[in-house]
Length: 480
Image 1 (cartoon, rainbow, N blue to C red):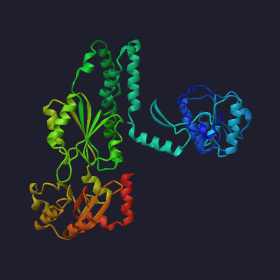
Image 2 (image 1 turned 180 degrees about the vertical axis):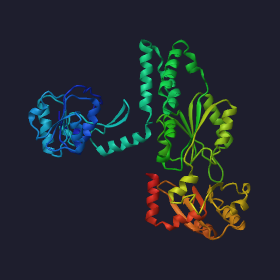
Image 3 (image 1 turned 90 degrees about the vertical axis):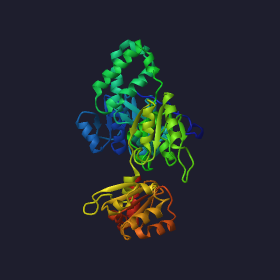
């Protein structure tokens, strides 16, 4: 029934994967849209795959020359659909597509007319493939642009090696034979999780052997699969702010987490990568005090680990760059809790880069020193002032006066280029530039607030040499 009534437009489509192996499929059209359909059909090995069009793209002509499809180089005729199992009206002519749909329906052949929902019996979804692992995305024909956006998001998020992981699971399943039906589902999930790193490294054969052995052993010794009361705590770097700068492993751990223990500055967009049912615990410290103490956070992580849960301790930037990750690792180690560290992109490097400031540059700076702006009394200011390289201060805004005064009193030049990058890599990014001697007054007049990264050194001048439009472009590229 054509969907041409308003009340029919909200009715859901039934999701299904069709077996087209050895079946005739006809695509009417030879342009870019038709090639998109052909490209999706080729892995399904329909036979014959027929393209009807007077002209065709180079890709379609190449596929025809390679024997992958039959190209009928002429106008469409109704008889072209005889014996077909599926038909596509994929030309640039909307009336022709509608005629193909009418002819197909008269023959009882399911048909898709591009961008014409009333003349579609099915929707061709956007696809994300990892080998034989296929994810289909549909908006019920309402917005191809939204389907593409979802596909691009999943392309970034889905681990590239999962096709190989599927091969490992299938090989282990075949090796188990009929006994696979009595393997507990949880044993499969545990086993796949344990061999994932092997597959990531390309050790597919070893991963298959390990998984098969674990599943076989689970048939006779099921208890060890569930006996461990210790979970895994992953210390994960959330990067400088832009969720697109998360590492693939960070996204994987978030998606698999039972609970996410996160800092205050971790954005909601980053937290959205966590599973919807994952518990979220905000342990962020507040400016000027308040929030959870470090000892309370350590105790919480140990307790969650002892409950056997998969925990992500999500920290801004990198866990081991002024993130107190070392203290948390020590607490977990002493308690006998399994842990791992997933490095993140530190704002010490990302913020200058997003502002167009290289922290090293031939002839200007051969080194970079990352400094904690909170603990002024811990630093050798004379050594910092003598450094010919770039100084990068994290958490510097609250003690900006003290930092500038210490550097100037220790001999750093007052005309030294300096830059403050506020909310680096996010849509709120702002760059404030001034010579070191004028930096405090300029920053306070501009109302700079945390989080902001301070860069002092010759390369900070790069930001002042860029036009405003270039700085905007760099920030957008950093967030792209």
